[in-house]
Length: 245
Image (cartoon, rainbow, N blue to C red):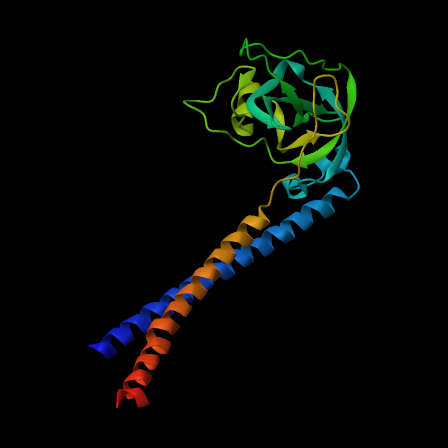
């Protein structure tokens, strides 16, 4: 019975140690992947800005995410969308999204123009934001579409929405949108704030998880060593030692 318990404990310990060590290594690998992603994003941010021609020439513009752009075009202000419950600098308000029709083309790109505060006394009131007419130059960086927030029911179609889906929005407006968006950068403009953070890669989170898995691995191995190896040997030593005679 004692030997059977030892074998069961040894097998269970070996499996647990292998599993926790593998999970720790997996978390370290995830951290390395995200570190590489963060380095790639930062290196793209240092590349020369694409203009209209260079952007439209890309077969997969989304592959240039977070690369600078300098685009000329016309705002389609009649299709403004205020995305609700968006935060910047710890404050809740709207992200203003406006399509920019690129000069010399029928294609357009969604531009996240910035964050604006909301009127909490009248939640249906849209902020007053000036939209220049005529051709404008927009500096920014390529970015994925605005992140989706949880919403109840179907997405709305009005100027104030919880989310914006580029495919649905393209069908709704008839605009030939590119499969990406632009975060407009530069100085704040009127009520618009443009303190866009780079995407969080949460590398520290994976390092923390890895530490927890390795600590559990070491704990299991230590308990096995103490209860299955060291303590039985000490008991046998006391039984067969000089004091046991």
